[in-house]
Image (cartoon, rainbow over all chains, first blue to last red; front, side, top):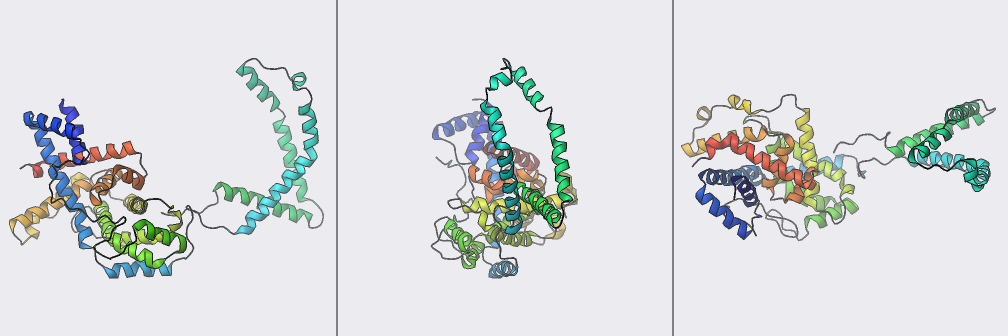
Amino acid sequence: MTCHRVQVLIQKSLDGTLAARERRTLDVHVDGCAACRRTWDEHRQLARRSAAWVQAPAQANAVDDAFTAQVMARIAASSPAPITSGRRRAALWPSAVGLSAVLGVLALLCYQLGPAVFAVVAAAPAELLPRPQTIPEVLGGLLGSMEALPRDAARVWINLRHGLSLPGGAGGAWVLALLANGWFFLRASGLARKRVAT
Amino acid sequence: MRDQALPSDLLRLPRTAGRQTNVLAASDSDEALAERVRAGGDTAAFAQLVARYRGRLIALARRMLARNPGDPDEAEDVAQEVFVAAYDRRATFRSGEAFRPWLYRIAVNRCLDRLRARTRRPTWEGLADLPDPIALSTGPLDTLLAGEWEAHLQAAVAALAPKHRAVFILRHLDDLTYEEIAAATNLPLGTVKTYLFRARAQLRQDLTEYLRP
C-alpha cells in the first residue's frame, strides 16, 4: 500500500465511506508510516474542528422568531406572482398575435408553393440531379442548390417592403403583423427575457 | 459502513426530512411543506421551513462571506434574501425533489453573487491584518487560543476559491452527501469530490501548525 493510495483512504474515512477491509489496510499502513499517521490525525482534527466552527452560527441562530417574522413580512410586501422556471409570465396577446401571423404566413406559403414543390419532388428526382457517389459530391450538390438563396432573399426583402406601401390601413396592419412576429420569436427564444436574479 | 474513527462529539444538526425538529414540533417533512408552498403559496408552511433552516442558512452565509473578525456581518441579510428568493421561485421546486439541495442551491448562488460583487478578494496574506487576539481577549488562555484558531480558520477558509469554499462548508454544515452537494452547487459529482479534496489539503497546509498535538 503506497502513501498515495492511503491519501484516498484517508479521504474516504473523513466521509465515513471506508469499508472494513479498507480500514484495516489504513490502520496497518499508518502503524508503520509516521508521515501518513500525522496526515490522518491532522485531517481528522481539522474535520472535527471545522464542523464545529461551521455549525456554530446555526446553533446560535436556531431560535429567532423575529427573523422569521421579518422574512414573512418581506414576502408579503413583494410581488405575489411566482417565478416559473426563471421566467416572468408574459402578456398573452403579443404571443397570440405573433403566432397567428406566423401561422397565416405559413398557410399562405403552403397554399401558393405547395403544389409546385410537390410536383417537382414527385417527378423522378434522379433525372433532375445526378446521384452523388461521395460525401463531397453531396456537399457540392447542397451548395449548388443554395446558389439562388441570395437572389431569393432579396426578393423576399423587396416584397416585405412592398407591404409597407399598401393602400389604406393595410400597410399599417402589415407593419403590426411584422412587429408581432418579431416579438413572438424574441420571446420564444428568450432573447427578450429579463434576467431574473436567483 | 461508517468510519468509527471520527470522535463521537462531532456536532450534528438534526436532519429534518420526515422527522420532528427541536425548534418546531411538526410532523410534515420538508418536502411536504415545500410542496404545499409550491402548490398554493402556503405561507404558514413556508414559515415552518424558515424556522427550520434559518440557523443553517445564517451559518452558510456567515462562513461563506466573512473574512476577518470584525467584518460587518451580512449573513442575516443574505439569509433573508435567500428565503424571499426561495418563496419567489417556489414554482421551480419539483415534486419529488429533495428540499435541502434546492434551498442550498439558491443560498450558494446568492453568496457567490455577493462574493463576485466585492472589489477586494480575500487572500491568505490577509492573516497579517487579523487583530491581535491577546489585545482583544480578557478571558482564560483556552478561550484566547480558541479565538485565535477560529480567526485563522476563518481566514484560511476565506482564502479558498469560492466554489471550493462552498463545497467544504456544505459538507460540514448539514452532513450533505456528495450527491446533495453536487445538486446544491450545480457541479458534477466528480468535481465535488475533487474540490473537497483540494479544500481539505489546502486548509491542512495553511493550518498545520495549529493541528499538531
